[in-house]
Amino acid sequence: MTQPPPTDQVRTIDRDELWAKIGRGDRFRRVMALNEWAFRAKHIPGSEHFNTPEELFASLEPQDEIVVYCTSPECHSSIALYWALLEAGFDNVRRYSGGLTDWEAAGLPLEGDWVSAAT
Image: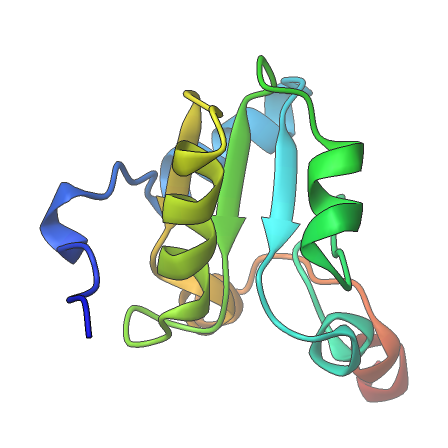
């Protein structure tokens, strides 16, 4: 069994930089690495979700700037997605390791069914 790639080699983006990019209207792809149910429940505004690797690779372009995220620093879904994208030839990929937990704790906006129900 092969060992997973080390997480300390993952290029990251922090909450403040991500929020600034959204605020400026920068063109980049936000990809949530969790399942469809979690995506429908809540996600960072403007995020995308893909049900299969085929959908993902058909929708993204190798030159896209991509930020992947999941729940929290301990969540490995975004790390796995990060490495899968790099292996497929996507060079401009970063991970928002804080994920939904960090984003929500800062009081930043979210979209999704649970967000609408809570307001």
